Image (cartoon, rainbow, N blue to C red; front, top):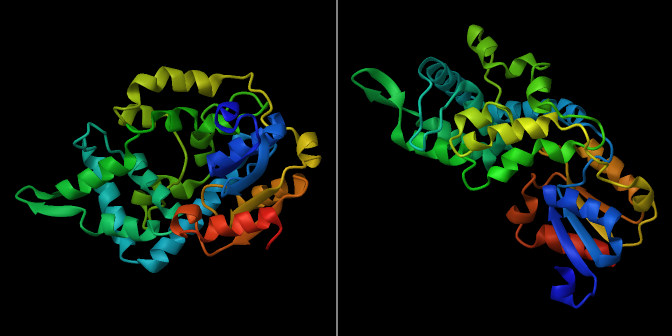
Length: 306
């Protein structure tokens, strides 16, 4: 693609989130094609397994949930009431999506964006309507949840998400699902049996996604095959990164819910010449939410002007 667009000249790439993973691999595989690399919220660990990624991830998600409940304490009772209703009724949303407690908890993915806490709050605020048979989930709530949870527009995201952490360490074996069992606070059944707040989850894919979401059901066999695959190659070349000569600038968002900050900073120290901007002004979507600020800062860093 690059020779067709540039006539063979190196180009500048911008990698947001998983795009940063791709850009880091690009630095290893074909640095001669790169003039500059800009990365936002997407410096991957060079050697962490999928288990290690999620083991670091669930505590970050818990902090985001606790911060949300501090901002909106009324949502504690609302979330518990909704998950209790969902556990009893297992409603099928207008899209054919089967809403389970685990699926409802996955709305926590919103908490990784700048306005996500507000979005989640407004979603929970008017979840129920009164009916002759008692409270029921409103049509507006069901439509909003169906839109937020459906992978109809991006099924490959769900199919390949866990595989981006598979690098020479054997099968991922549904790592997010297995590691979740180590953190009892995310168990909705245990939550309902007691009085603790419901903990939402974040960016993780589980086997139940391929049962609940009609867009993913045809891909269940493929997802199981990917989870069982054992011959994943190494994704990154530490030696080439240590000898890097391409200007690289990276924005690392402090306590990013999607990408572990500590792992990102270790990688930043491993890439020769990389300039890092660590900020708590933005969440994972900073490059979109900030207008030109994040991109302008990265360009200035890459040029040596900042």
